[in-house]
Amino acid sequence: GHTPPESIRGYAVYSLYFDTAALDLYRQTRERVSDRYKLRVRYYDDDPQGAAFVAVKEKVGDQIFKRRYQTDKPFVEAMLRDPNGEALKHALSNGARGTALEEFHRRGHALGAAPKLFVAYEREAFNSKSEPKVRITFDRRIKTTLSGATPGLTAPRFGANVGGLNVLLEFKYAGERPEWLSNVLTEFGLRRASFSKFAECIDVLGI
Picture (tube, rainbow, N blue to C red):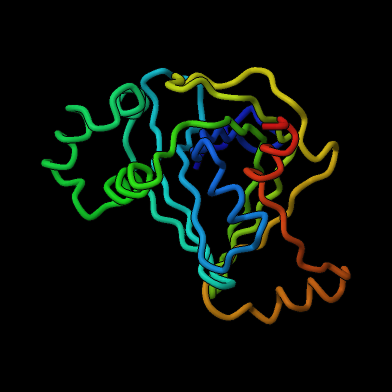
């Protein structure tokens, strides 16, 4: 849904990740803690009034759960300037209770998390027509840059390269793996590997 018609390599994805001064969320990833999570804001364009998605990405064992709340960049920027301010209170009193926004704020507040870095890349995404649904994504040209303490959500233009010319391939599905996907993995000799964009970016930036 985010692919512009003139694009040949999919669409741009921008994420702002949060962590503590001690990098607690990064350490959970690197130490492979079985139950862990990440806090991020994602958006897809450089429109200052554009959509933004506040998200909690949680890993429990081998399963990944994503909960996200759609809003806009001015709201997120107001929340970044004042995490407990009027923008958040107004949203919570107008339907955001029990959503990913409240969870994001609750977890971030309990941790003392703050904006840490931006990640930008190009994504090509394909969705299967058959059941069960499978989503396949190809991520290229991953770049990262440090964020300020209260950054705006302008699309970062530059950054350190992550992963070189490699392409990050992900298969996403719920429940059992479809037989056709198992056949593809076998035929091409694909094996599962762990790659956290967030953790890799922390390492590249030398935080």
